[in-house]
Amino acid sequence: MTSPSSPAHLQETIHRISTSPGSFAILSSTPNWPIPPTASSSSSDIHISILDSSFNPPTTAHQSIAFSTFPPPIASSSSSPSKGNDGTPRPYTSRLLLFSARNVEKTLKSTDATPHQRIEMMSILSSIRRRTNPEEGIAVGVINEPTFVGKASIIRQYLSTLPHLKQNQNEDQRPGNNVDLTFLVGTDTLIRFFDPRFYPPNEMHQKIQEYFSNPPNGSGAYLVSARRGTEEEDRAIESEILCRDGVKDWVDRGKVRLLGSGEEGWEEVSSTKVREAVGRGDWLRVEELVGKDVGGYIRREGLYVN
Image (cartoon, rainbow, N blue to C red; front, side, top):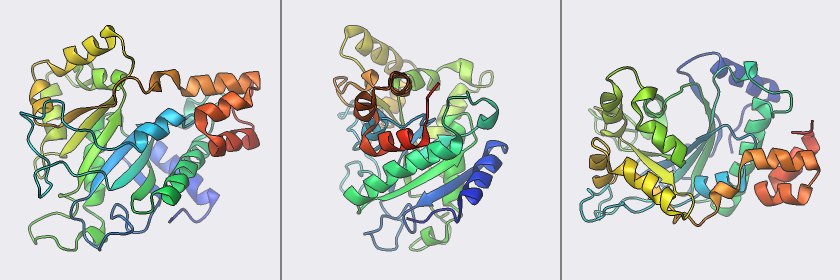
């Protein structure tokens, strides 16, 4: 794994991104990310899954979603294929754990993990994944951008600057344009993504078009929502969103997908429950919610103790 040269350098980078809107940085990664370590030096058939979160702390739910497989289309009979040569969607080949920092240093509670500590916990997850899945590329990054439309555009722009993605490209093609991006979200974020209140007046459809449309006209990103719960109400919420005008077309194209069956229990695991368990001194429960390695880090650092 490549990593910042020192804790001071890491802290400086986090502060710079946190105070600079529209900025982005990779803090650690496998060599030549997003090209998988076991692949040839080519950017063909790369698909990056991106989990963007506050990671305060990262839980087993974060891990399950971050390291999930690319789900099938919701309506396979009408969905257009991705860019796989055999007409089927390509699997994920690389991962990005993304921490959103927007002047986070000014909003921290006294018991919160610092941005530096959150990055270190994300790096623990990255190291575990690197050991168990050495064929994948994985990176930890930080970004200062409130919208997924903006995040996709910024990451696409970053990929265009990577010299190792310039190989095997046509002269008129920007590096990284043939790399697929997928953002992994929860139901609440899916609702906000298609809510006009979170966009400038009368710009939602234009921004969403920009997010889903393939380069060079857009970011060419997918949106995968992790299903939660098994009640009729849960399915009704999903159905109402996915059948809306301006949404269903992207569902039919396979650009919006659902992850899981709703029975995974993701909604039963949360960062809030971890912090509450630490407050009770219930370290067995903490390890159940975050895993042994992250749990050990929380205990060593004395995090979330009132």
